[in-house]
Length: 109
Image (cartoon, rainbow, N blue to C red):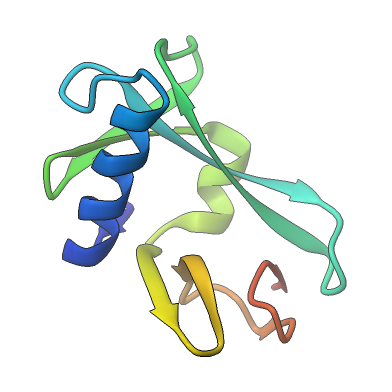
C-alpha cells in the first residue's frame, strides 16, 4: 500500500484541478525508473486510466495507481509534500530505500 499525507492530499487535489483532472475519478500514477544519482528515481504523474497490470490503492481520498514492477520498490511508501526552505515539492518517504540522494529524487535498495 502507498499512503498519502494530509498536506500531500491537499496539493495533489489542487494540482489535479489545475491540470484538468478530477480527483474523485482520476489517478495519481506513481512509479520508479532507472536513473538519478542513486540508481533509481521516482515518477509522479496524473492519469485518467489504469492499465491492466496496475495496482490500485486509495488513501486519504487520493486514488493511486502503480505498475507491478514499481510496486515492489514502493511498498509501504508515504507520499508527502514539503514547502520548506530546503525546497518545495513531493517527497517519497520510502522505508525500502537504503540510500537516497541529497535532493530526495532518487534512491537505491
